[in-house]
Length: 356
View 1 (cartoon, helix red, strand yellow):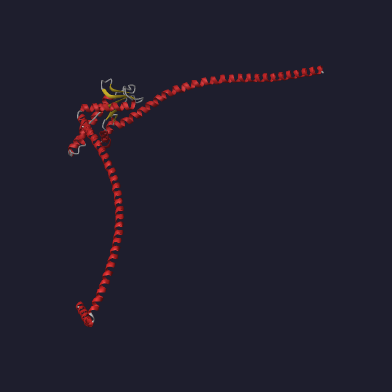
View 2: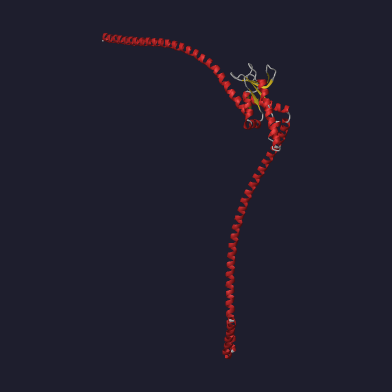
C-alpha cells in the first residue's frame, strides 16, 4: 500500500513539472538535451574505456597470479607424486622380495611336509622305528665321544648272556660297563594324545602305553644289568622328546618304577647331557692317573736340581778362588811394574850425571 501511495505522489510531481515547463521553448530544451546526451555519452564512453582498461589490467594480473599459483601447485603435486611413486616402488619391491621369500618358505614347507609324511610312513613299522632309534643313538654317541671310539663305547655289543644291546658305554669305576638300549613306544602314545578319539579310548590307550613302557624297563633291567659284568644300572633311550616329556610330566609312577629297576629313562637331550658329564669324569680320572706320574717326575727333577745346585756352588767357589788369585797376581804385577819404572828412572838420572 505504501508503494502505491509513493507511486501516485511521484506521478503527481511529474504532472506538475510538465505543467510548469509547458511554456519553455522547446528548442532550448532540445539543445540542452542534445548537449546533455553528448556529454553523457562521452562520459559514459570514458568511463567504459577506463573501466575496460582497469578490468583488463586486473584480469591480466589475476590471470598471472593464477598461473603462478597453478604452476606452484603443479610443481608441488608433481613432487608429491614423485615421492609417492618412489615410496610405492620401494613398497612394491619389498612386497616382491617378501613374496619370493614366502614362495621359498612354501617350497621348504612342502619339502618338509613330504619328509614328515615319509617319516610317518617309517615310524608306523616297529622294525623301522627300532632302526631309527639305533641310528639316532649312534649319532649321539659319535657327537660326544667321536666316531669309532671303541675304547669308550661300542654299538651292538653282545653280553655273556647272549643278549645284544644297542650300545655299551665303558664308564669309569665305580660305574663300569653301562648298557644303553633304544625303545620307541609310539602306537599307544599316539592314540593316547589323539583328541579325535573318545575319552574311554584314550584312557585305554594310556593303560596300554604304561604297560609298554614297563615292559621295556623290565626287558632292559633283566637283560643288560648283569652282576659282576656290568654296572648295576642301565639306560633306556627314547628317541622322541615328546614321549620323554609325557612320562616325566604326567606319569610319575613310570619314573618311580624305572628307579626301582635301576633303569634311567633319557631323551636325546638328556642323554647328551648325561654322556657329557661322564666324559668330563673320564677326563678327570685320566688326569688324576697322570698326576702321580707327574708328581714322581717332579720329585726326580727336584733331586737332579739339588745336585745341579751343589755342583754349581762348588764351581762358584772355585771361580771365586781363581778370581782372588787373579786379583793377587794383578796386585803383584802392579808392584813389579812400579819397581821396574823406578829402577829405569834411577839409571837414566845416573847416565845424565856421568855425561855432565
